[in-house]
Length: 229
Image (cartoon, rainbow, N blue to C red):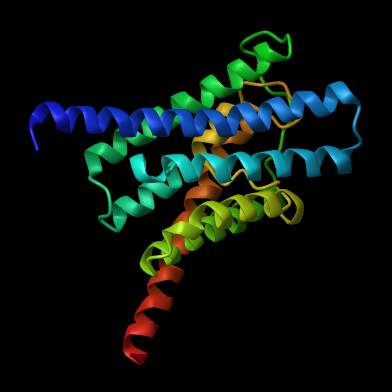
């Protein structure tokens, strides 16, 4: 492959990661603004946001999987890097564009709903219970991806990830952010789905913990399977 075509391939991958992460945050922030505008109660609002994010994840993963692998998540990129499934330098740039895409998504969502472009979030979320919720949400997400890749069932990733995140909005105490880039992005919106900047470090720590936990469980499951075979 020539250096020019290689550069074009890398650019396409980075653009796909930017757009995919952008879509996640513009959805979760935009849905947050919308449920407020409509005066929806908390239950309807939570279901609406979870459903919207799950559906957009399904679409984004489906269309971008052949281009970039549809990470859209530094936790996923880091774990796949540890598994040597992505070049470390490319992985670094994936994370950069994921964060930029997430922030851009929040800014555009704010503008769509006639808010200031940068509207700092006011919802403080970090606590012992939400930390645990993020560990569970992220470990489940990463484990799903690792096992489906290992089982060569990548055609199921979009539905599985979209379903997991939608469900996580309901059954986790943290409402399943499960993504460091998305967490940073959501600190730039005052929608009800935002997160105060002071809660971001705790959420990111929980997400990275969950990702490493998923990697450990993955090795236990696959090593046991290989021995049994």
